[in-house]
Every structure is written in C-alpha cells, then in structure tokens.
Length: 254
Image 1 (tube, rainbow, N blue to C red):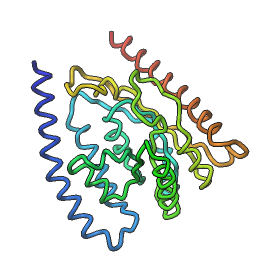
Image 2 (image 1 turned 90 degrees about the vertical axis):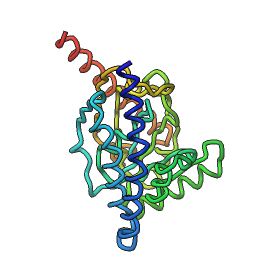
Image 3 (image 1 turned 45 degrees about the vertical axis):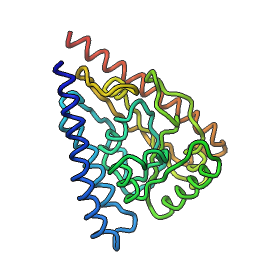
C-alpha cells in the first residue's frame, strides 16, 4: 500500500509541477530565443527539469560512469539503448547539448510535448518513409549548426531489458556528417518503470555508462548497417559488464 500511495503522489507532483516548470521554459524561450539560436539554455533548462524527478525520487538511485568522455565542444550522433520512458529523464541528467529524435506522438503530451517544440527537437512518424527523410534532413541541419543528436536506435523500448537490433538511421547520419558516434548504455530503468505500469514497487538502482566515442577514422570504409552492428556489439559488452558489477555488489551486500 505504501508504494501505491507514494506512486500516486509522485505522479501527481510530476503532473502539477510540469505546468509551472513549462511556464518557466516559455519565459526563458521568450528572453533567450533572439540570441541563443541553438537553444542551448533552453535545453539545459529541460535537462534540469528531467533530472529533478530523479533527484527527488529515493527509489531511483542513479550512478553515472564516463560523463567526462563527453566533450562539450564536439558534435556527436549519440545513441542509447531504450528500456523505459524513464530513459528520457536519465539521458537529460547527462547535461550536454543535443536535440532529441522522438516519435511524433510525444508532441501531444501536454507541457512536455510543448517543451519539445520550444527546443526544436526532431520528430518522426515511424510509419512514414517521407518522415524518415525529413528527420535525417532536420538532424543534418542541427549538426551543421553545432547541435548533437540523441537517438534510440532500437526504435522502441525493449520489453526484456536486452538490446534489440538497431535501425540504421543514426549511423547513416553519422556517416553522412562524419560525426563521432557517442554510445550511452543504461540499465535498471526497465525495472524502475516498466513499459506497462506506473506503480513503483521497490528501490531499483539505475546504472548509466558513457562509452568512448567511435570516431570517423574508426568506421571508414563500412556502411551504416556495419557501423550499427559495431556500435551495438560495444554496447552489449558494456551492458553485460554493468550487470555483472551490479550482481557482484548485491552479492557483497548480502
């Protein structure tokens, strides 16, 4: 019963606070849009917004490794595995500048979707080939202007926490723009907030590891599918290591 009550209060707080925080985002946009063309301040505000709910929830302790591998002066095509809606908050907590690539349905979420519009994040209709072409075009424009891109290359959330096969859009973009690919591996979010259900039932550690960027010189001469497979193998190895370390930690505590 405690967890049910806590979950209701937490989601109620999230919904009500989003109204107030979005108003702050709107004011910030009005004051900074004329001189902050890439909306960096707007995105940092969004990172704070997303991180706030991780900081305030004692059942979602998070550990981040490799944050120092993100060069703020570098433009990346960043990719992450996808276990839960909670991943969006977790990625925001890395606090580096990027534009999300998100399914268009997220625009319809009150306040959150409107904030996506303020940030000029990229959306895609997964059922439309034309939308995919437009997404690549929009991402290229953002990269040319100095913004990194963040994509979930699995395309949707994993139901079992394992990394699904990658779609090649992110890697096609990296090849076209000769951008480093920045892999981010996360684990625990699928248990913290399952795909079906909103009741928080236990304390679940969330582990995040930023991996070494895959530089353009490392993928010369291969196509987007090969690059995707290369990055996926790196991420699979890192996920296995994260899980091993978490299991060892639990064993030591027991």
